[in-house]
Image 1: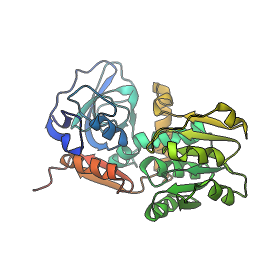
Image 2: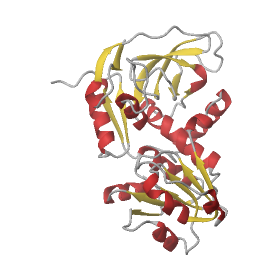
Image 3: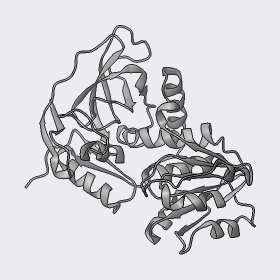
Image 4: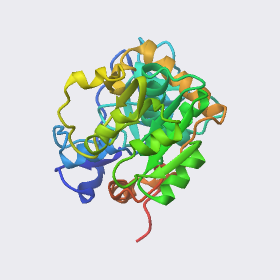
Length: 329
């Protein structure tokens, strides 16, 4: 089958179209024809060798398509079902995939395959952060970093749907406008000298009930200074660099809490994965959650999609369209 292969670690140029073989199916697997594969920062880290995998490998952790066959132990899916999947370790930048069935969820009829592929990893992350970890509820105020990014914009939407007031931070005025379109009540570029004062000003000095941060080091101190009493700092990445050392006694000023969240701990069982996926697709079906911008490109344009994501020049989400042929030279 046709697939994107990584034969050596490096930049986007190491992504090459080639041929890959599927592993044999186990009783708990499903065989899926992949229609769309989502492109995520995690894929860039695997390609570059930041997170090393045995070479060669097919990148990609999420996608959507149609079930071709089910293992004997699979009871919740049937051939012909439209499905989406996430956390697939064998790669999704390929025409077909054999996937453990517990990581595969049926897609409602009113949700497009490419939308489902685009929201799986980032949408499951956003839903888990907001609804499970932070338990955001109506009347609360939250702060979202990178609020125009793939995950950040979905955190904004899920929190807004829960009834929270959302303050948002982004790197450019264009992204501030995108965060407001996503549903933020107020948004800003990062103020010179820090953002805690901006947050306090917009909350009457109280601070926010939760901060959602994938930036890390540069924002960490102001995150803590932006929290209300018993506020929660929820970290789910560190794109800005390592964190400073923290004396736990600092959390005592306001009885604050700090969590570093990873999706696998919220979706690590069949029951949890299916529950989160059903909740996510309910939000998508109701129009409460959607990628800010969805760009579908052919499989051979994977290097360009990686380059755009690394440069942070694009809004929204790229997906690879496995049905599209190569772009003419």
